[in-house]
Image (cartoon, rainbow, N blue to C red):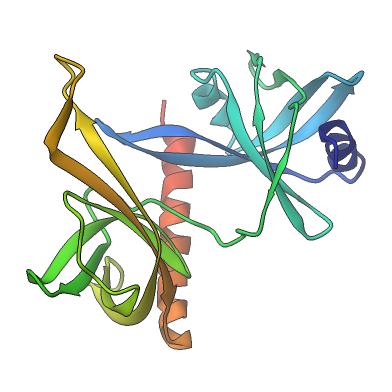
Amino acid sequence: MKPIEAFKYLFDHDLPLVLTFPFEEEKGHVITGKGICHIEKIHGSSKVTLGRFNPRRLVYHLKKSQSLHANFEIKGETYFCLIEKLIVSKSTIGAAIPTSLRSSLRRLLRVEPSLQSPVMVYINTSKYGTISFTVQDIAEQGLSFIADSTLTIEDAFMCGLEMPIDNGTFILSKAIVVYKIESLETDRATKKQKDLQRNVSYGLALLPHRKDIKKIRLYIMRRDLEIKKKIQREL
């Protein structure tokens, strides 16, 4: 589907776009903020006006952005795009219609935990025994975390998950490593890579019991609501 066709479909059927943007929840702790909007008007084949933002103060945060990431659903398929050339007013945003779209099968809500109330993942390793990591983001069926070295773990294993709900909830889940990306930290002063400070990003697919899925879903829903409330009241 071409971008202009997609945007006309959204406009004709009054369907929302979900916008994501960097949101500094605490000083130095940037997470992904989310909100929705609708297409108010289409100008020819190249420009669009976005409005009806929810939360209402969403526009305030978007003033700081040069571009927006957006996703939307049409006929059961989810599309992602980058919206650029923003002209932000008090209640609307003018923008260029994106030049391309990409589709994705990912539909489950994914959130980033709070710095003050983290989600922890526990993994048993052959070298260090049981070690824990702070979860970077989590969905019902997956999570990611960063380690400062490469872990010797099986492709499929059991892990523990600790979530800050109901005075602390701990579950066990089968897990599968779906990606492992290694990077080197850069020294800001010399702009040279530090060979001794390696960061490895891990992505895990989770296969929890159906009752435990409900617990993960509860945490995600509460955390998503918490972020939305902070966006609404933040000035």
